[in-house]
Image 1 (cartoon, each protein chain N blue to C red):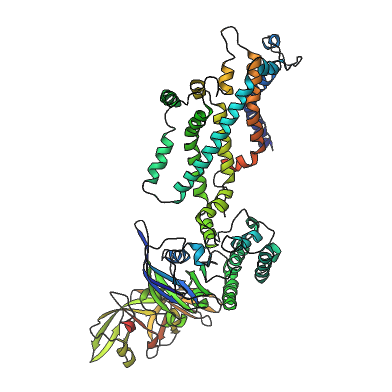
Image 2: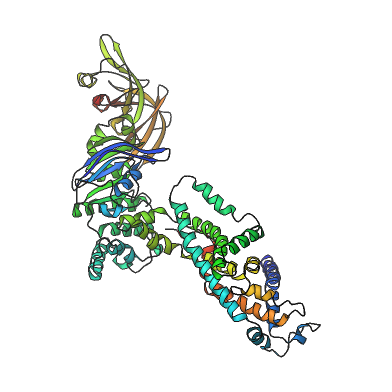
Length: 366
Length: 274
């Protein structure tokens, strides 16, 4: 168990730059999820920490110790690979015992057996120990990969999209299980995923990574409620955030926010967050779940036309169209609408996100 | 049903023809080795006759085939081992490490097999005599290794490229060195490829005639050269040729049958997936 410090980390593969100056501080015992689309540099980040990829520029400290020049085995970290990377010619037991037999540990046979059995029982794969890994299902392989990581007591756990290739139901169960395991072992953990649900649901803190850069680090609530820029806002939430081009205009001495779909007066709170007065053009973000629908016209509601509906059980996704823009609303299924029907929608103005039109930065962070 | 049966019949005929073409010469060889000189030349050919081991006995008593078999074995095994050790390491490096011009290096290695081997006979002969290596087993091992190496490098390289690199990375994270990751993880997984290349290297070295004929005289003479020696100015010793030929084929045959499982896996490259 140890803390982790990454300073200005760069990773280049030939002409491709995978990491562009990553800085990150992870506290001892923390579970950090790294959220980013494919190609964001998540795997590169974990593999440079593990030492299987060389650092181009920068420093990594594990437990305060610089590890830049240490081999992977000297760094004492354990990793689950996206492909599981189980040794196909070995049994489950041999796979899990492999790290314990390494020249770095060389435990006694009884000790190895004890530890492997203990972890196997915990992961409910003790009945598979004599099987060859090629006979296992995806979920079972995933458990073996986890087991191979857990038999050691390393400084860090690194998990590279460990459950991305499992079916949805299994994924949900394992999410809770992995989180529970991490709490039990209290080992500092880095966990990458491209699924915002995993990232927010599991992490003590979430790191949003894109194109090799850290966009935001924060608690799940911070990431959801205060996305640093439009990319983070778009990444988190399903369906993703609606965006409209917006203008700040002066109407009868009052500042208004005007989009093709709606126009509202800016209240004090919003004006406060608009620190830069010169801001004229903005990108307006509004989460589908923050919009409500009504059949009757009333104050503060705007008109739109139902474009398409997707009932999903308790909730439904309604796509609306207004002012030449299409956007989505997530609401309860209690009311059903017809395609082409005229409806009214509204929202609380404090649920609006304003992003700088050029840089995409949330105006609250400007 | 009708269609299915036709298919079976056609398939059987095709397989039958292939079998006749492939096995008949070998059968002929074995039968000839067991015939007396008179039976060999009998027309029509005899399939039922009194078998004799006379040819085998005379090959080892009248002629000196025992040391030749010994030479062939030493040379083929040594060259196979040498090619595998050097070639596998080279192949692994080409597959795993990005080095400047690695594509060109691979192509250059392959290009050494692009011209007819006979082109090299004279240069090899001159070099060998100048270094005093002519007619030595050591020379033949080196010569065959030069021919086997490109082959080993290319087959093993594609084998290693098909192995997920994550396996070795996992081993390194698990506390093993770079070398251990190769030795304990990558190499055992490419065993089918190693078997296949080993057999093909062995067969090449074991059967090679051209270079052995030019570069050996007495000390390092191999079996194929010895067989050629049975065509003399006085007579062609068909019986002995057949007897030695049968013995020459035997080890390869046994080895191939024994390792058949691995060879099939080896020939279908990329059979190892995690």
